[in-house]
Picture: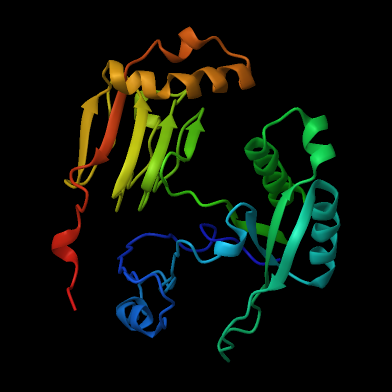
Length: 278
């Protein structure tokens, strides 16, 4: 079985390059590929990668699941489960560029789904929690399968804002390149030193991160500002804390037993000095 990232290499030392079409029209990807050429050789062997917004406009209301498979048999098992819990609107194999040096690449498939109405109703969960539990079940229980990306568009748009509440501690790279929305890290059951991992908010250029801790212990870059949460900040997150406490069955007063800190980018364009204008 193929090992997952983090088991064989350490994912760190990232750089970033950006490209946007101001006209909204399709553009060739050669430009951004060339800009990433300096990342082809990295000390940990991970090479370069890409993240895109709005690449599936025709499926913007559906959940996109991107899955690695070790082989056909585990794909069939996973798709049987997907058929049980979701309505699959579209599925396809993601094309790859073959190279002689890589001979054991996984099968890579993508699915556009929505929760099966009857299953969702019987679960008594909202669709976000329902989908998250399905993804975790695949990654934990179906051998040879790994959902490496899942969800809807996670960028703030108009009055639609993604919110992520983390009850325990966070790993490294929390909020990396965060473009909008809110992350709430509660650290319940952990010390202040354990709440955040390394490289928190690296490349963050939008949104906020709320951290529950009497003392903020993470080392942050100079592009990130920190302040104590005021009354307005707390009123923004209190509905989500109330919903979270109701889901996991803990009293809200336990969450509010510590203060909150707010992390946010120090401008709307904190890395502007690093961009190249063409």
